[in-house]
Image 1: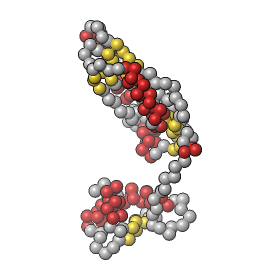
Image 2 (image 1 turned 90 degrees about the vertical axis):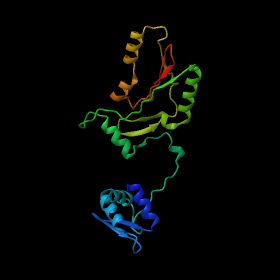
Image 3 (image 1 turned 180 degrees about the vertical axis):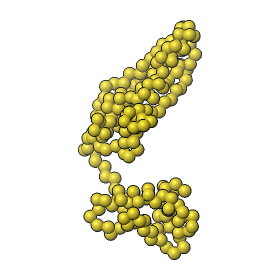
Image 4 (image 1 turned 30 degrees about the vertical axis):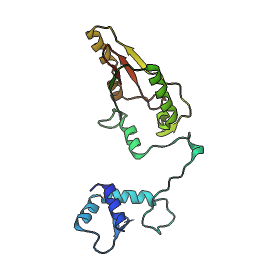
Length: 209
């Protein structure tokens, strides 16, 4: 049982967890903690203790064994720098060459083929997405915080037109401009263009990467 499923199950059963130094205190109705649950608690003890310590370290008192952080909207701070999540921070640190097996950026790569693309309309649609979704305008600052930019320069999809070219030239050009290799090397996260969309026009269907 993974940690999320375990905590959900325990909550539904009325179980309360509390950190007592390096020990995990379990307050449960009689008969609820089965041998399997006891084994799962032991397996995830370190993770649970970490969560409990994080949730209670700033609490002025310990009336409750654990608490859930409340998310409060702050629209007036929408464009102010804010911390990375733990996972984002791990990705950010791992993309540097400081750690063994590092120097590889977390990235997503998609390649789509299509026919009769309206390139102007596609570019306009992409621009609308960027304007609508804040995280498409997010950057990571040198101090490890992230920030949503209020405005960014208009994005222009790069187009490589290989229609009518010899097969050998087509293969060479596609290989030379393939953003799959650029992604693995890393993209500058402190720039508004931390995303790349390219279109290759071929005699056959267009290719979008």
